[in-house]
Image (tube, rainbow, N blue to C red; front, side, top):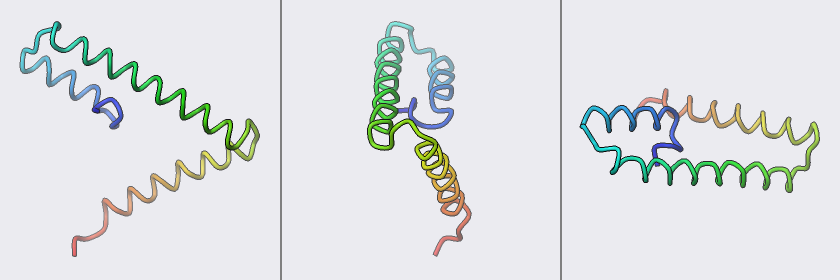
Length: 82
């Protein structure tokens, strides 16, 4: 799951090394995570192309969604707890 979080892969890898996990325990899960992430990324791109097509509008919608998600995350992180 750490592969899907920003910087998660690095943190988990460093943590595995710091706790002296063996390569035999770590490598299969890391390979599975990499394969799952790659399939997810390709599928997301393919579905986006099917839905929006390969046009400038698709690029504009993607960039707007990216900035919207970033703005939403920034808002949620900065708001004061109730």
